Image (cartoon, rainbow, N blue to C red; front, side):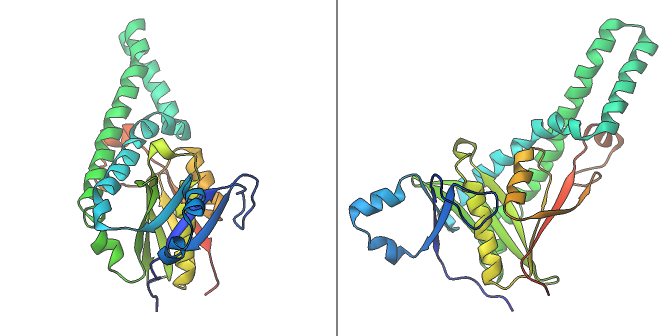
Length: 278
């Protein structure tokens, strides 16, 4: 039986040349403290502690607007990434597009149209990437991201956190418990693009791992369609191992029409971090 962890504040400071327990990290330290212990600091100490510090706390109702903004912007970034960067992960699609370009020349005998063919194909990829991802975003914003308290804060074994820097919400992450296999799923991780490169995502990931350990889960799992290599390196630095991937993953909102299948492909990767043996 799982239980909710007591409400705590995670303060993460970026400290040069300081090692910690998580492999691949050399510049971050995490200090757990309650509000009362923070209040015991004198003003001079408090100023030093809070400088460049990220506080990770549980979601509050007043955070809703900023949380939705960060989530929305993070998902919208995936449109060009999926349309253009994602093509590099699809060798079969590259071959098909090259074949279509050659066929264009064979049929039309027009060099101009043939030169325009790749641009038309890339335009179609962008259109369908935008269409599918906006449908997915609309679905998310009308389900769990519409009522975070009901989906994550009230159920036992789940939680939602925000990262706060200089009084602003700059990052989000959720943990959703799964009783059927005694795992917790890391979900909805996103960091405001203006505050990346400060170790915020890794601190959020650690918060989920700490939550999983506290609540006696056997493992932490996640699934991602991220195209950028940095996202995958982040999960691996936290201790996750890739357990599988699918080239034919279906996002919520996909119609799977022939044109959509031609111009929108996405790779879905599954990761798992085993905490203890069952």
